[in-house]
Image 1 (cartoon, rainbow, N blue to C red):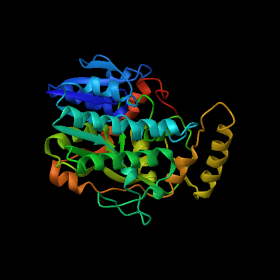
Image 2: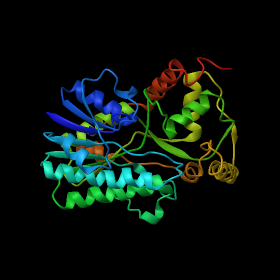
Image 3: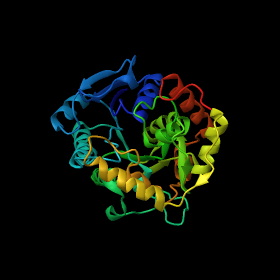
Image 4: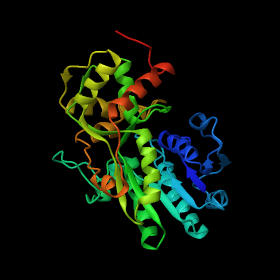
Length: 332
């Protein structure tokens, strides 16, 4: 089967490309000229240079493909030119879906994020029925992904066979950039986390997320949405797992949210003047005020989604970061 994939240079997309090739798919990837190719080195995929923001290049690259996985996205919690995020995450999504409709593809899987569904103020686990509004979205990334999801819903209503998946916080090997969740692991390993706040995440193995995309393509119902999540863990629980894996002590000091929020506001404000990105993006700290917990029951029931233990994914992440020089091999 000929498959069109966007986002192969990213964390999830790179794992999905490898999974597709293991399944015998003939994959064509659309990548920007400036994109790193580390995540798909050695892959047999047909790599086409183009841009999501250019409808003509998207349509040309998709020609002849039967299935589409749209994983690409501009994932930044700090951005100097917000329009760039909307151009990729909203306009780019519209271009991919329009090209898929014109090409008559058999199935589209659009990668959204659980951030468009939650969190719930009381810390309960959100599911696919949790409806949020654009006004609920914190920051340009979440707003752009919310609008991108609305594009996918609109095309589904027109008859495009599109399924929406919502990965939670993926962890594992190959997180080159790294992601916000990967930075938690790195800050722990590099002893840059002297304290923590009362928050939580739903962690999931990135390899399972890749498998979940294939399950959505095979078993997902057109127009439906599925959360691809794993374990709901407080930050304290995540740090305890990392301590057991790495041999390093977990921080014991828990801070009230207002302290890191104040520091993040100052750090982000200075980054708008100085030529550097903030160490503590304000958007990330605002998101940490609530536990990002999610319920994947629908994916388990309809897709056969059965993610493995997240401890193994954290072990791979720690080992990968150390082997690739992101963190020293052992610190005391």
